[in-house]
Image (tube, rainbow, N blue to C red; front, side, top):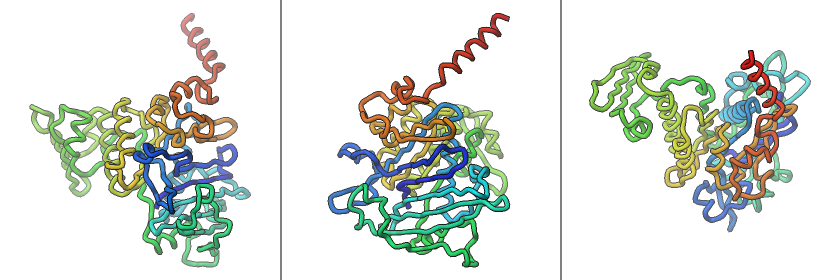
Length: 386
């Protein structure tokens, strides 16, 4: 299952409607095609996805909230109950009188393009699905990008029936589609580990990976034994160190090495499944070269033949220069509510240096306000004078 587009309205903390595209919005050249995943081809037309999606904005612009929304959608598609999904707190301010509408477009392995229309509301402090239907059409009926999301003439395949006793009120009808097709989304959500620096793998770390992050380490071997672990770390020309808890590694390995091993292991797994990896503040603990390498791996069809997707947020404008295209970059702002816009709708040219455009505030709302800067400067000046 591959996400094509998500449209959402009625979200608390958001300003207006929001849309997130995973399929390419801009023209895909022959060179671009080598860095992207072709989802399907109809006649002479091919439809591609971006293998890397980035969200950039200043502090408190709402980047993490958007990543939580994407996680919520993926978990809902994977048959998880809304009230058990950890990031469902983004809907906690939803009132009983209001509702959130999600239109989720996705491509399935049975060569169909699908629309899941879900209306979420709240009663007695619990989320429930008020209305829902799913439409499906074979890829052969897709004639153009414009037609890709047109389901007006497509009959409803599955309609939510509130009288069905077997269906929980907070579980999507996508459960029936998944059971029929055997499809699902492979998701690695690292949001809970953003501020937690602990090795999360339960098997040996590949020698090439540990050398990439710390050449002084000879090996890192991990074996899970019940509730504890047998961890063996050896630096070159030194005695082996034996530990029982992953947290003990923090005494010997840098935070960048630990987080790097985690992220790269997640990436390796996603390459096997063609899944999604969601990372908040990708630049945290990493230098530019390490991040650039990771992005490059996702864009390499030889390493990533199944089209795994890396979705991340960042404050680091220079990361934007890793992209040749504009349509895999979202500018996030928070003015009377969170809103995001695809860079391809704001900036027509691909040849401009994106970091300079971003930092110049040409896009508006992408750098700290001058008034705030002056107030802070005066405050520091006042403290110094005292």
